[in-house]
Picture 1: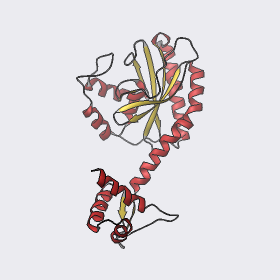
Picture 2: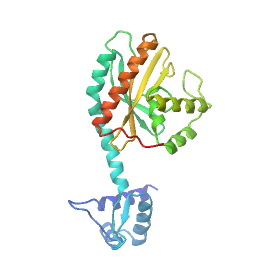
Picture 3: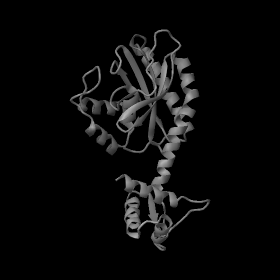
Picture 4: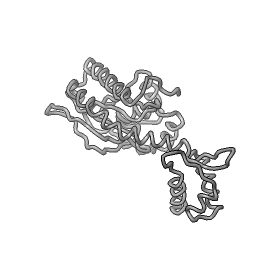
Length: 257
């Protein structure tokens, strides 16, 4: 399998544009890579099926497909997210006086990729790189709520609901009901799911493609999150998550579910 992947990557490399768009025939690719024509043809068919290459209907020559561009933009979004979000996170932490986290999805888990600590003595301080299933915690659940429905269902199907690593009992049914609530109000709130005595408020961050690519989260001791304070903090989290989204090129039209 690793050999097949290596050959597929070699084909993609040879099709990389050199200043202008490049198109090559199966025979040209075969000669350039010293690879059997049949192998090249088979690999190109698989790559084309997934959009990584496309064939010119007239010339029958191949070039890189739109999937390469899509993954490239997603990677760019990920690299830009932390840089763009940081000043907004610092400002949000000053206004809320709580710890602020930036999270992204990696497969079936949510990961903290940056944080700004609360200035208060009693505060929440989770490590960067902390991973939890996508349905645990406000920062993760709000991302899950806005994912493409088919991807969302794949993730929900893949979780081990008999062994939920949370401090509170959870079921798939209860999570699915809450995802609907999150989409209606625009943010998620959780209490004591991963760390006892803590409350988190998460709002989604969207890319220029109107896809959810992360979340902004304010977290602190539950004793500081009464009803009035929670509403105030939620409004601020939504506001700053929206400002980050705007900087990434999002213009307020989420993909329909």
